Image (cartoon, rainbow over all chains, first blue to last red; front, side, top):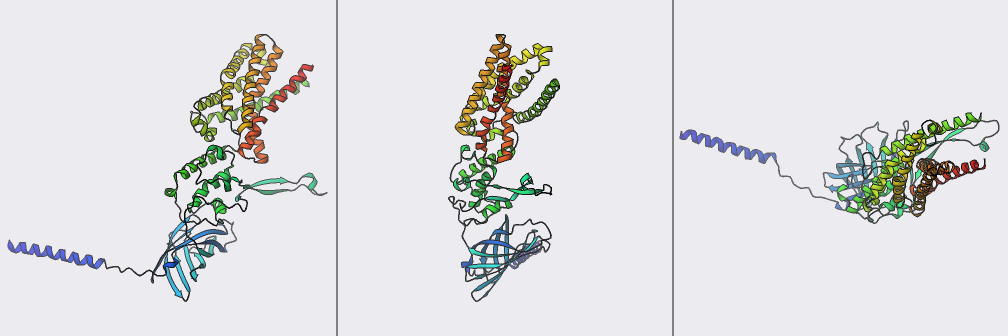
Length: 298
Length: 211
């Protein structure tokens, strides 16, 4: 009996012991690698421009999108980052090599998305990030884009407004109109020609005067606005929070704006109370405009 | 020949009316069941929330409009008047009573809060006052057996009733041609909806009176 007890005890002890050994073996102490060149950390922002495009098919992707490449961590063996462009928020991982005053990076998107690819760029003198992006899928419409990015830090500022320097025209949604030549235009001996002309929506002055983030909007403030104005006012709220827009219609208005930096594809929990209420109001008016503006009714 | 022209004109008018009446039915249908935030009310939430009786008067106006249009239309049938005068009288009474007690007062009330500011407000308020006056006059004249004046005033009344359709018709035309901002548009259609109707009727009555 005593022997048996000893045996059991020794087995138990042995098994305990072996378990301990195993756990020690399975989790080797991870030595934190020293982070280097932390001055490069942060957002690098600029235009993401088409370099190679399959011109045999209809043009769907925009020539230029605003991109934000965020560098989060650099060590001797790895670089961690993130790319935010056109409503696409992707983690980046890769490596860096230094050559004089130039740091050369190769960063890959995970590869499980059809739009993923590889970034290859250099940072010269800590100020300008220059390089290209190549799609993993060689059959994509746009397989290569180039970029020159400057370092910019995103900060939410409810007071920024769309610049008043140019007209805001919706080039992405033209309305085709058949136009037949009038009597005077017709030359003798020829028949009247019909041709198609594109009509574009144009936004009103209101989008550079009404601040949809700081002012609690009333119905009377926005009653005289057309759908395009309402859409832009609502999306300006999201732009101020650094939302990266998926739709081309919206991107065309914000990509060229100096203060706009895409940082995220979900900003819902950052919206202020005023902004949330304005979004609801603007959406309601957009729906009304959509359903009623050009139809029989009020 | 003249009879043919008259017949085809009234046929054309009937087809037009039926077409637009169906559109009006579809518009009314949006408001069933009664809700506080559908269709036009989507941009009227300030009034809905701040003016206690707004929603009540709005719905009185919306729900009676369709019946006023329909009964009004049949008052002009010479056939009904000749063959079934009691139908002319009973639907006529319905038309008059509904306008005087429901449609015109509710129209006046919601007109005070009309879209498009001061200029559309005067238009809608004037419209509802004239509508009430013409309808009342038309009724009082038939009580006096004055058929000529009865006909004239009910015709004026219906010209204003029909502005429910012409206002929306002009809106479609103006948007197609000029794409104005919604409230600029509203200020125009507020007047364009009923003034031309009334002018046409006055012109017709003037010509009749000369005969």
